[in-house]
Length: 379
Picture 1 (tube, rainbow, N blue to C red):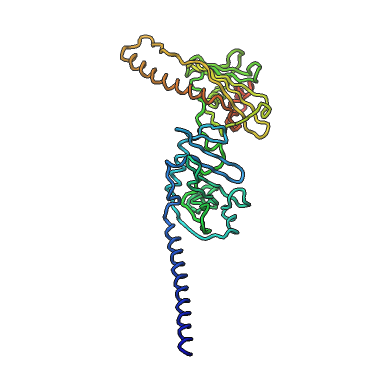
Picture 2 (picture 1 turned 60 degrees about the vertical axis):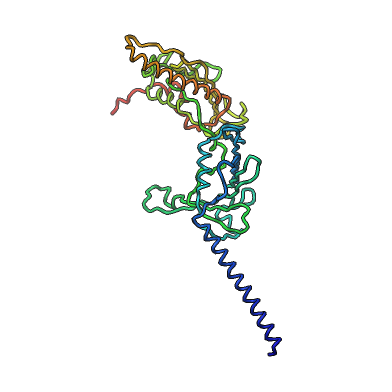
């Protein structure tokens, strides 16, 4: 081997050595970058104040939450007010969320962990996207399959295969195929618009009379009581009223909770309506229209509230001056709260709501079901 060949060999070895060293350090850097993500926040750059729009989308539904002035609204529900607390909790949880596991997953394996973007094939997850007020995307990622953790001490049948303890996440636009796992199942990240609506609803408190019957026809039954804590009785036609059925009907009306807002609901979408009319000791009248949907088992419900609460308290007989002052103050405070509540309810009255049939069952009783049954003498 002459001098020239020796120098060529040395140079070749140096080049190969440099390339190998570069690959080595590249692997070390990749390892360190991956390791640094463990324990790091999932969305390190996201700030609560910058978020003005949130989009959640799965294979079937989509929800767009938009911040307008001092409130959030649900775009898919005609601008219905969104649950501010739920949105705030969701954003804060995501900002504080930390990575517990990081791994490389090929494109072909993404469906197995439900990390395919909605609309791009089977095995899709839930796309979550945050934007600022100008429409710029601040963060975008896909929430995939929930990670289950087995707990042998949990006796519930639903925990047999494990309880949700984490979730697979794939950050959109990532240069690599890294998939991470976070330590929270993020159960609140649902794309159904109804889940994000503010659930304030009307409350029929201190009911004095309650009647139920077909729309445009005489009531099937009407019950009443003379004083707030008095015994319920049939009004008008006689009959032996079942006290538990009466209380059940009144309580059902006073505790209604809706699942969704029926935007664009038409009369032909539901069967003929039943109307419940409740008069209260506060001089308010609630008229509630209830119609079973032709498709499914849910009901379309709308309501109106009329009347004004008494502006003055009627003093009790023999009332002492010190009692009068205290009761007048309590009356004024309660009147303020009631007036504010009625104003809020009147704002809600422009919408039609979707309610589950189980919530309506105690109210939608026939007259026969409201009558007390004779006790069985054969015991």
